[in-house]
Each structure stands twice: as C-alpha cells, then as structure tokens.
Image (cartoon, rainbow, N blue to C red; front, top):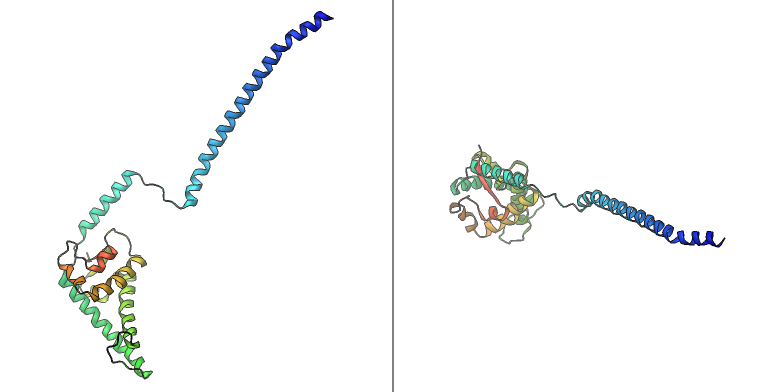
Length: 213
C-alpha cells in the first residue's frame, strides 16, 4: 500500500511538469493566433479608415513625373495673347456691357422714375451697372471660357495648371482680381511685361489668356 502511494506521489511531479509544458505551449499558440488576427484586422481596417478620412492616396513618383511632363507640353502649346490684343477684346466687351445697360438697365430705371445720372458711387443705377459688368465677365468666362470680345479676337482664358476653370478661380479672377485691376490700371499694363502675359487678376487666379488653336 505504502509503495503504491509512493509510486503515485513520485510520478506526480513529472505529470505536473508535462501538464504545465502543454499548457504553456497551448497558451503560446493562442497568443500567436490572436496577434495574427489583430494584425490582419489592422490591415483590413486601415484602407477603410483612409477612405473615411478623405485623404487622397499618395500618387506614385512616376505618375507625378508624367503629369508634370504633360503639363509642360500643354503650356508649350499655348500662344499667349499680348497687351494690345487683350485691350481690343476688353474694349469690345465694354461696348457690349454699355449696350446691355442701355437696353435693359436704364429703361427700367426710367420706367421706375429713378435717376440714371450722377457720380455717386453707391447710387442705385451705378450699383446695377456694376453688377451687370461683373456678372457678364463671371458667367461668360465660367461657362464659355471667353467673353464676346475674346470670341471676336480668338482668345480664351485658361488655367495655367491645365485644370478646368472652377467657380472659385473665375470669381477670384473676374470679381476680386478685376476690381483691383480696374481700380489700379497698372494691373492691366503689366500684361505687356510679364512672360505669360498675365494681368493682376490673372496672377491672383493663376490664369492667363491665350490664342485659340
């Protein structure tokens, strides 16, 4: 009886050691499996997080180089319109705007018994003609890329980065930039001296005027 108990008691440490070793091996395998699952989950979630953040995927260097080369080729095809060509086109546009005011704005003001004369800056008729002036340039440039004057002389407004003219670009060029150019006439004169024949309003919007091909 005592010898059997001693035999069983002597075998217990080895069995316990084997059991501990098996448990340790099993725990290690579970931990490795969990770590692998977490890593796989991170790889799966990362693209969706990038998409949700709205950040653009970085373009390969080769694509950027090709885009840059294409842009240089595009700019090389441009034949920039000089000062006098743009001047005559602008003069034609002023005649068109004057005609619009004479056919629409002034008759309406006379019909409403409102004065159409006077030099006050914020007089209603002056505000109305100013709105006509800026809307003419904004809408013609946005939707056609050229005003009637530019159409007659074969000119067109282009983005120097080759992009389609956006509302922000057009508003910046034809409203804010043109207001400054009209106020400070040198904003138009610099067209004659800059390599890309840009006026002050062109410099603000990163645009210029070119001859149509």
